[in-house]
Image (tube, rainbow, N blue to C red; front, side):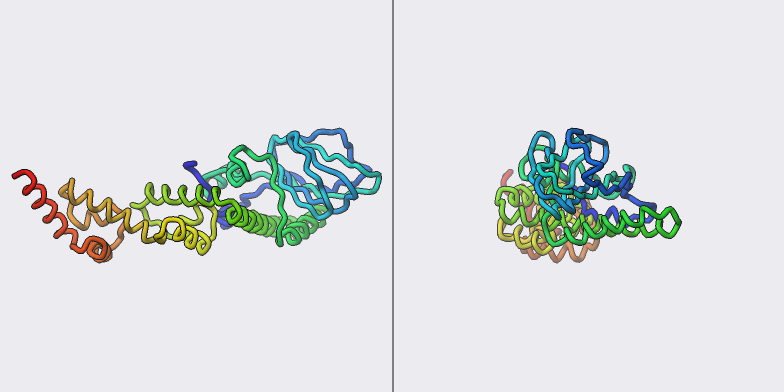
Length: 304
């Protein structure tokens, strides 16, 4: 677990073009539907069930019962087929999309495929994700708007489709994040796993300019939720833990090297030496220079 996603919104802040590539969007009606045809493709598939009396998706061998207004996100290269168990009409929207590879890597550091695996209920790779929260209505409405604009080939519709697509993926991001935090609150082992990952992230990045939002974003948790959970689990705030790691590393530098105090401050992640001095004195009761001198005297006394 060395890599975790940044918020999807980071992708959407790009000024270099659309990070989301919509391959197709279509409205499927019952008279166009072939119940025995298995679908598998390279794109993600977002499916919105508009009308269905009784049916299910078979996704990678798992049967998922469907109801009207259900919203599913199916991963690439996943075999799936819709099984209708009624003669009544059915309608659903299907949006296939992918991410621009260069931007996905630059802005998230991890693929959406890995992200969905990461937030699944088990440690195994999940084949689909069910979206079931307050954002579903917004997402479904945007899918229908994109579908409507897709019928017009003019430049205005192209521009509007781009805006609608960006908005769609902001809502999708928020929806997944909401479900992710809900899952964490009901699965203690998952939350513990995330907090441990955050702690390791701090240990490995203490010497960089990281903030509370950076640490929380690393494990895809809101800043407030993360800060409360970290304090409860470790009995120390994330920032206090970061400072304690920095000061411990500074002790090692003072004991084992001849680096100047200012150089050590920079090496352990402080941009201002005075702040480093203040934090060091608060945690050790001594200034960095006093600590170095005290350590040298202690070593000499032990050798005599």
